Image: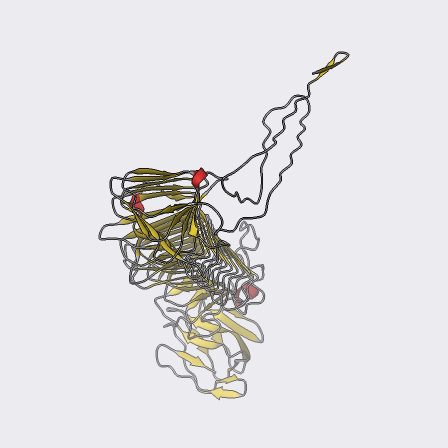
Length: 612
């Protein structure tokens, strides 16, 4: 201590002269953590190393006998070397301290647990099970496995397993894993049965990297639960997670399943899951499906991301009609085919974002087993710049609402093949093709916005004409206040009389859906000196020796008559049609039908439809 006036300076010298270790310590980083100082912090630290000692020269403990009592693998005697199958007997226990390395010398060497195993690694001082070769990760060297027998008690914390045939194998109910990693093994984790209780301890904070199969799940006769939280399942040579037997339930949360050479998750149709839940999972860059799921009861996927998977982001197929699926607030981007393919009856698909997905519809929902008691809800989703939009082919009740679809590059923004559809408050804009309706529907299409100038029609259909059915597409906004333009944006009986009628009036003339069109109904019959067309609302007579171009199909409803006097010539430049909806079209000799140099004749048989 030295005094300089009123200032006192304390000089403390700490000198580490020599530190001798019985073993070699290997590390990439040395961390210093000063916890207290006075006024200013100053530290000078010098670290002197030596040449690395080869494994053959290092000291260690050979484990040659089974564990038959309570034993501890201590850090100061590490590594522990095993060259055969070592058994932890039912009444015995083995505790492994932080920093211990357990080295296995050949493919017959393994650890078999009947009793109790505790591996107590720390975050910066992990326990390692590996082959005794260096460097770690050399796939030419393998040992067998850590095998957990039924009824044993295993707890692994901050423990890594390298270069095994099967890193860890046994019943999930007999083990707890926290912050454990399995690397470069033929199979990462093989679970022969799950937790008996769904609220049981999950496997948390683990990594499965560079293995053949990442995680394999199977089960016994009763329902088993597999729970993974904060896991990284990445860069495996086949599937990230694969199930091989029935009676499994799988939950994955806050995890990453990425860059596997097979599917991220693969569930066989021969062994469907009972339920599947995913929450905040990143499924990215897998070389097959993001998730291929066959399931019996429930699929619940929320706040997940499916990106750049080669084929589908998610492919789900139900094995029972009782299946219910929820997809909420997920994102799907750059998947090679569909973002989502659902072969299900009961679906809730809400709040999802789908961007630039592959060569099929971004969302495909298809199932004929549904009834009007089943529900398919697709609401509040955003789709932009996909190859195609949404494909619905189901017998369930469909609610399609509050979706925004733009930038589809081919096919349709929405393709609907369903009987019960509520289609409302959607924005379908700037797509190459808009909405296609396939099945005779009980539809309500209202309060939507359709603005797709690159599409030939806003609504297209191949439904045949019927006196019993029509589609009501009133109360929508079509991007224009011109009635004739709005009528031209729908392909129906007014374009081709063989098609169903679609009524578009009244319609909105403002994008906020506030102001309605007040002009003449664009569906109604109009006649001037040169053109006629539309749906008759009163009796009309076409006077003799006149000529008209039929610019829209003429529809004569029941109870209304269209009288055509002799000498009338009707021309069909765009090949529209003349229809009798069981109204009255008296026939007179002397009038003709003309269209593109074709002259036809008129037949009075009912129902009356003729074409140019």
